[in-house]
Length: 411
Ligand code: ADP
Ligand code: ASP
Ligand code: MG
Image 1: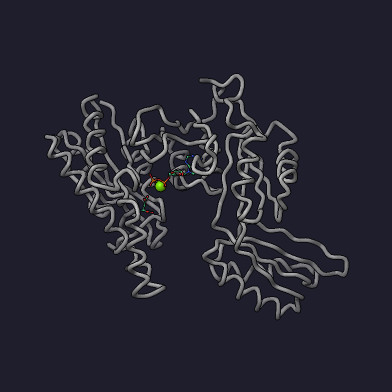
Image 2: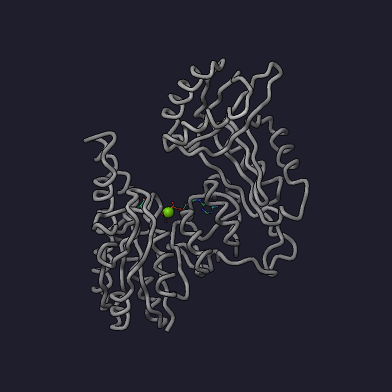
């Protein structure tokens, strides 16, 4: 008998009607002869609401207590779904992460899964029960509740699928698959039948929140067949898979963007060996992750350094930079929170030149100024002013003809 792990996101369990709808889907999988483990998110908006409550008490609550609080959202939906299944005559049992025993490290609010005990779930499955597991949460070796970072239910689902050697992990959400870019920004965005783990990982890391980054990492590592589908409509969705010859031969498979970054610049620093370390060392020590970095060499033996950090870390980074600037005798420190990173992604880029210049020309034609550029084998990212986000993404989507299926596409 096939074993399927199905994960439903916040919108898909956002009301009682929608939970009933999920129950119907699970019933259909059962009727088709499948064993089913369901992973649920909290109702949409609930995790944010809980974080808001915490902040009313303390703008910086302890992360341990935050995890105790935000993990409750998922406990509500799992119990409601189990009830909806029982009402339909389908035996079911819901479990929190701690009950299953999803063992994680102790990094509260961003814990990593270490091990999953499958005995209890297997027992339920052999007894004909549907297992409903709370996503986003686990427990550390000391018995503390942990959570896996925002969007973490995707990772719970993939990790369970890997541990159970499931035949497929299905991620049900409010769009019917992975698109060439966020369909909420570009109406002409096209659903992809397939995308490689590598490209999906790049899209997720560069800001496409349709799948949490770690879920894709996990799926790639353990070769878990992963599919993104709509919980509201029928259809094949998008399969995330290993590269094969049957794949669409597109140069670019998608465009990702990230609104969560901010840019900092320090100007007129004496240009001497170790200067990047003296500037970025203290930033790293404060646990602020730096993304893009650009260093310009000035004429008068000074240099300018620009880098980006997560917007949540902007103030912290600015403070550090001002201190470092005073120490080094730098001329000026500035910051900009109104920027975004826009990236084009595709494995086809490896064997084709000219993608970068096409990207830069497209932005130039729209009179969009580029602040920073970074490239890898399969992506090109630029930082531009936030006000140009939609324009940039739409123009690039047109320029690379992403609304059209590439010739020789394998579907
Ligand atoms: P869930 O609550 O089900 O986990 P999310 O909001 O986390 O759902 O993810 C689904 C959303 O991801 C979509 O509503 C869509 O706006 C957004 N998204 C961003 N990039 C893409 C993309 N390339 N393809 C599909 N959806 C995308
Ligand atoms: N409820 C959590 C969040 O909002 C986890 C998830 O939905 O995947 O981030
Ligand atoms: Mg999500």
